[in-house]
Every structure is written in C-alpha cells, then in structure tokens.
Length: 77
Length: 398
Image (cartoon, each protein chain N blue to C red):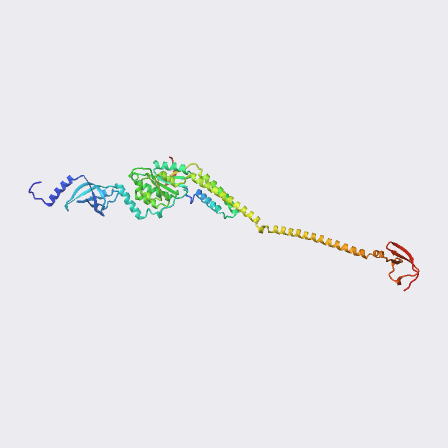
C-alpha cells in the first residue's frame, strides 16, 4: 500500500516558488543567484501548471477483505 | 364491594390495585419531573408534578436503556404507561413505558445533552482544531458508497481541483451500527495514514437519519483523529455533534468538497501572478544594475583619470601657447637687438670713418697703425673709402 508522502510535491513546488518570488521581489539577492532562482522559478511554475492540468480525479476505496485486512482498491461509481 | 364486610389491609390494597390497574392501564400524562433518581440498579425513579398534584413514577431498566436522553429535574415530559400499585407501601405510581420531552423532541434533548457533555470535556476546543492542508494530495471520504454525498463530492472535486486522489471508506450512514462503522473508518484512515485530510458525512435526511453523526463514538473518533476532519452532515440547517468535534464544519458534502481544495483556476492565476512578479522583479533588478553602472560611469571618481588627462592636455596646450608667445617675443627682441647691433656695427665700420677723411695705410698687406712699423723706401697702399692710392714711403720723422 503506498505510503503518504511527508509533503506532496505540488505543495512543495508551490511553496518553493512562492519563496523565490518573495526573495526576488525583495531584490537583495545577488544578480548571479537571482538569475539562477529565476530559472528555477520558471521550471517550478511549469511543473505546477502541468500537475494542475491532470484531467481526472483518481478514486480508490479502502475496504476490509474477508480476513478483516484493509485493502485499497479502485472504486467503480 | 359488600357492605359491612371488614377487610384486611391486604385485601383492600389488592382491591384498590385491581381497580386502579384495570382503570388506568394505558395513560398519557404530562407534567414536570422532580426528585429524579437513577438507581444503581438502572431503574429510574422520579416524581411527576404540576401546580397542584404529584404522582410517583418509575421506569424500569429495560426501558430506561433505550432512552436517547437523560431525564432530569424540571424537565417537562409526556409519559406513557400504566398505573401500578406497590402493595407493601400502599403507594400507587405510574410505570412508564415511554418518556418524551415536551416542547423539544427526545433526540433534540439527547443532542443537547451530549453536546454539553463533550463541550465540558473539551472536545470542541478551538485549540485542538487542526489546520487543514492547503493543497491536499489524497482526500479520505467516509460516507455511503451509494449516497448522494459521494457523487456530489466527486463532481465538485473533479471540477475544482482534479489533481487529487480520493480514498473512499464506504460505511453505513444510518441505522443500527452506522456510528460504529463511521468511527472505525476514521480510525482506519488514521492507522493507514493514507490521506492528508478527510471528509465525513452524508446527504440530507430526518434528524433520525442523521443520528449516527450525533453519537458519542463518532465525536470521540473525530477528536482522536490525527488527520484533519471536515464534517458535512445533511443540509445547511442541520448541525451535528460531529460538526462540533470536527476541525471544520461544512454545511453540505458539496460545500466540504469546495472547502477542502482551492479552485484550480485560482491556483493557475496565482502561479501566473508569481511568474509575472518574478519576471518584473528580475527586470527591475537588471534595470537597477544598469542604472548603477550608468551612475558609476558618470560619477566624478570614475571620470577622474579622464578628467586629469584632459586637464593635462589643456595644460600642455597652455604651455604650448605660452612657449609660442615667448618665442615670438624673444624673436622680436633678438631682431631688435640685432638691428641695433647692426647699426652699431655699421657705425664702427672703418669705411664710414674713411668717408670722414681718414685713410688706411698698408704695407705688405698689413695695416700700419704705428710709425715704428713703417718700412722706409718700400711701397705702401693708401686706402680711401673709394679706392686705393699706391705710394712710397720717403722718410720717417717724429
């Protein structure tokens, strides 16, 4: 059964993006570094957009099998 | 009853008992509870009274266990039961089959009592409310797999933020055992630790239909959950105990789905704004570097060497000019001097003396300036300003 990630990648990316934006906005990052950050920010925003554009909600269900063991299966509406 | 017959106490009591119990075998009576006692045996004893009268009442444990609420002093109730006589003490009482609160429904009272109890225990404290994740990746849903709630939730999530996964834990949401299933589902989601947040709930129904969500077992499961819980039971007007225990109450299951994720277009907008801010900050900072550079190249110190060069060159020009001026001046001076010298030289020219009547005598091409150099009887030349006369020295005298 897949484990829950400590923090999901989308939120991580978005949080990092937000931080970069704030740092760049404050404007006291050296030019070299800010250019690198800018590049990273552009990549992150692309990643986030791609994640958002995933089309379908995935639906699973958590049920007990005959032995009372929990199992995760696909849910058919 | 025969006249004149003397009865024992027991006989009379038995007759009264018969008369009362037959005559009042099915009564509805309303009044206010006082002297309420829950005996350790589980039986309830109390007095029902109004302004003028009172009657003892009892509810046996078998019935008392089914009561949804706990009667207490001052409560106005409607009793249904029969009159019984307790022979050992000659008392009559009403044996209650049913107690219904007056004014408020039985469930309502039960609800309020449980609410108060859990409130006092701190299950609804703001401090223990967990914060919902901003961008949940997996969302647990505890509800009926066939109900309206799950369909509503799926359709809202699909529309608002499809980049998520739903983990449905199918449960019974009404009827016997529903509350235990709901509580177990909350615990299972916690032990599996699969989801970032969960929604528990169901669509609308009567108070009885929604009752599972008013049970203590569900409230406690919610309170113990490490995963944030959103409670979404029935319609907007329905409040359940689970709403109070949950970290967030949603008025309906659809609303819960709205609350649990942001709208995709808002997030897209947010990211676009980030990109815009990032670019403009970058441009600003490049502009500001440009300005700094421009500022520096125009600054006094940056231009000092250049300035010094110009000053030096100017100084050279100046010196050059002065040199030129001096040269001209000196030249003029020299010219004047040379002219006056020429004049003086001219004035010293012996020929000009000759003109005044002097002559030069030369013997053997040497000027004879003294008598002792004259050689007698030798040819001499007498130079006049305009020519030479040949002569001969005849003699000398002093």
